[in-house]
Image 1 (cartoon, each protein chain N blue to C red):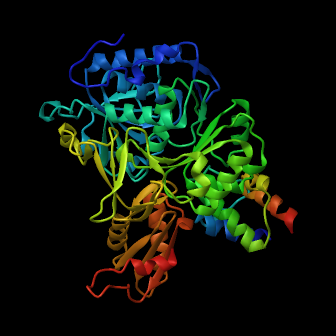
Image 2 (tube, helix red, strand yellow):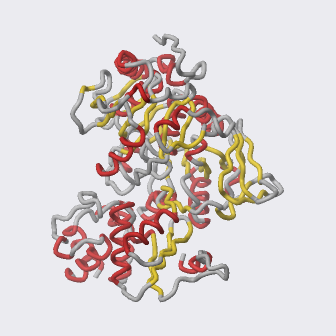
Image 3 (cartoon, each protein chain N blue to C red):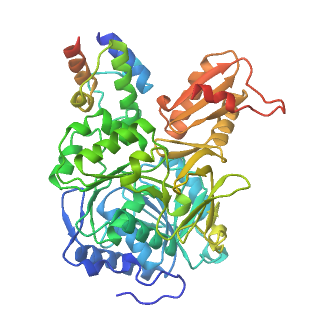
Length: 473
Length: 74
């Protein structure tokens, strides 16, 4: 089927081009419990690819995704056709879409709940964006495969540019260190527009394994039933998913099919790592604690499960094909590998840019390495925290609150706990801030702590003293 | 008990206490998502000085269900 096109450079043997090789094995069990064989999936993706290619050999689009068959087919067709998708959550608030349309001038938008043409093989609704003025736009860089947001739900126009090569090499590395094989079956527990969630899809299809497509959360009464009924072998989660699993008695239930647990998306506390590490030993599961960034497509390192209990708190060792080291000048953790992004983008013209990082990613994390070569993240150079797995920029929140509340604000904290100090006397300020964070960022107030103080703590230089806020975290 | 529980719902989900009605259901309003649910569980446990069983954490899918469950522990 695949004709050669010269305006985009996919790797030879790109996994999404060889779905048909897995023929009669099961690729997906979809949200309606329908079984989709690899040969079926390949035919569906072919039909959708054909449609996109007929529109144009290479275009940019916004693809709103959930864990559903139509979305997975549309995503794979984009990769196969050479169309570049910006992957966005299908739950993104509608007022956050126009800024993305303005910044990126996409040629099309695909999502379930809109007017348009049903994408063949998929059924997702395709709508051309007629306002885009194509003639004035520079061509998309040939190696550019897809675009991801680093923030998840805030609709920030800052995107990560990932090459086809980065997607392929990271999927290969994950297959290798997790030992994925066609007999594996993962439950999709994370949004596919989120780099960790996407990597589970990519790596399993790359290995010829199966995905059980569900938006079922841990708190759903169906959660245990889905694992048992479909003989799921692996589940994955960000730290707060593990907290929920723990609180809902996951450890007391029996899941005979389960073999692998993976965790990423921010640092999980040592106590919980120990709980699940020991549980894994008892049950004979492999529990992988991992580290990554969207900027690396996303996997960077993992702790081999047999070393987990004596390396609690470590981010582990580099994935196959990658290299980690600590810059002796400033202690910054640096990663080198074929999965590093091409660079960031703020608008459509940035999509023409070449590879700006050349495989070297300065992570922004401060780290040390022990005598066994295991890395430990000790702090962050960049001012952000991860809340429920999503990256939240502290300076951005600070500025947003300052301009909305008209008082000086300091925002600091650590993963899973942001700290906000507002200067003033009025306790209503805290209520207003709480409301704004819920509305603008979808943050629940258990993830941050607000304090109204008479004067914000300052350093002698007059700059804000963020370390002083840490006592509240 | 019902008023106290309503207060805890209103505070944990950050919604008006008039909106805390029997038919209020998990995940049917954006404010009652999984993160809010875990905060709600912690607040109920603290407010009534009880420890909820794992299955009740999952079964507490509406305000009326919550009343039923909490009553069991008092």
